Amino acid sequence: MQTILIKTSAIHGRGVFAARSFHEGEIILEIDDSHIVEDESTLTKEDWEFNVDCFDGKTVIMQEPERSINHSCDPNSYTRTVDGVRKVIARRDIVAGEELTYDFTINGDNEGAFPCHCGAKRCRGTYLGDFFKLPLEFQIEYLPYLEVWFVEQHRDRIAALMSSQDGVGCLISHGKE
Image (cartoon, rainbow, N blue to C red; front, side, top):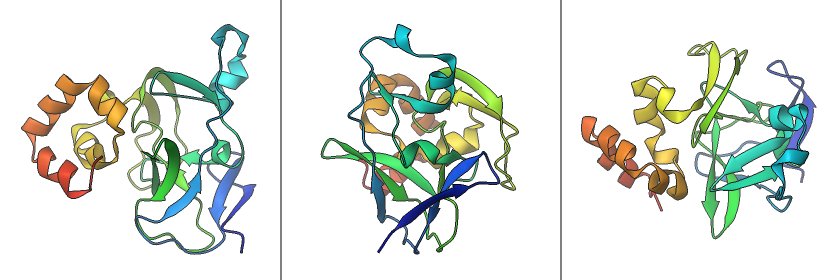
């Protein structure tokens, strides 16, 4: 049975949709990170805007279907590296037919910015690529979804954030690796 579909999205061009329901915590798909960019100077502006993902010191050309997953300020999924493979995981229950989204700012460490048209009630209006530019309440909410490499890379800032709230319990309660 097919679990996802790529079709026209109201958010942005094409999107990825659930062909069946997913439960919170369920793995939706594995991301193909095998297309590592060795020379970033070969990338076009379009590549940077639509096809590239940067994480853990790597730059990767995203493949279908993951490159068609759109941003939302109220995402229903997130990515997590498990045994060296990035996976898209349901952040909450997702019903068949629902568009899969994640907040591109989770694990974000860049100066990217674009107008957001996600349509969520809590839409921030503008995507900013730096996790630490999110409103504080979003940073606290997203602590459980941060990747190990991101937490290690920003150890002091994450520690300060966690000490400002009950972030430690939040991070531990979600089984942070």
